[in-house]
Every structure is written in C-alpha cells, then in structure tokens.
Image 1: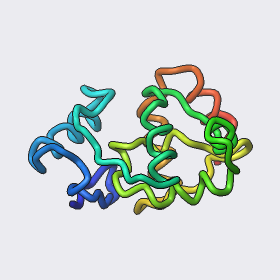
Image 2 (image 1 turned 90 degrees about the horizontal axis):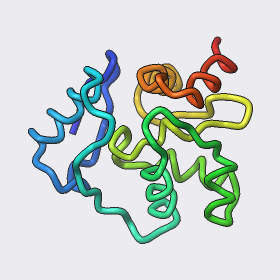
Image 3 (image 1 turned 90 degrees about the vertical axis):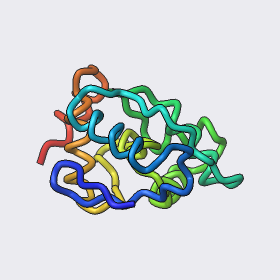
Image 4 (image 1 turned 120 degrees about the vertical axis):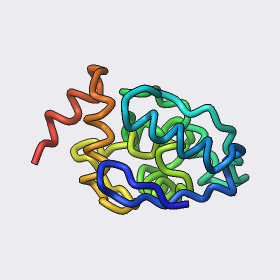
Length: 140
C-alpha cells in the first residue's frame, strides 16, 4: 500500500496490519494532521530478529527516541544489526522505526524520502523533550 506523508511516498505491507486499508489510511491521515499519536491496528510481527526489533520499536512512545545502541542493549545484540532490522521494517510509521536514531546522527531511514522524511516525522512529534534535543543536535 502506498501512502503519501509530507510529500513522500511510503510503502507499507498492509497484509501485516489487521485493519482494513481504508481504516489504516484514515489513521495515517489522522497521524499526519496531529490528531493521532498511536495506531489502533494489530501488526503481525514476524518470528525473527527483525520481529524482535519491531516489538521494541512499538514500545517507543510518541515523541521519544531510542538509539540503535539502546535497542541493541535491550535485545542483547549489536547496533548495526538493529539498524539493519529497522531498514527491513515492512510497516514504517505504524511500527515507528523513525524513532530509532544513531548516537551521533539521525541514522538512516529506508522509506522514500530517507532522512528528510525521518526528520519530518520526528519534528512532527517534537512536543516531547527527548525528540527535540535529538533534532536540535542533528540539524543540517
């Protein structure tokens, strides 16, 4: 499923989300307008390391960030492996991989728009202090 967020086309594998496409599109529109902070949709998480990382990302609250190293420590893994798993996230936005950042940069973002979209998403959620401090440290 293709959605456009802040002018960028984002691909989501709607087969992994247990909501109708219309409902998911409406929730994404609400998120973009600032009317929604969490998605009311069950996501089928794979039984794999990527799935473990996806579960960890779902635990990061709106407006907050974690570093790849933070998530790696939680999973007894390595930051590079977490970054690779974030890049394989089949449902970006719904599973908020944009909330995982580098220790000294925004890190990557595999959705169309790359780090420009990631920065836009974090700025959208900027009402929390953690995100604001990360963004101010990495402005280009």
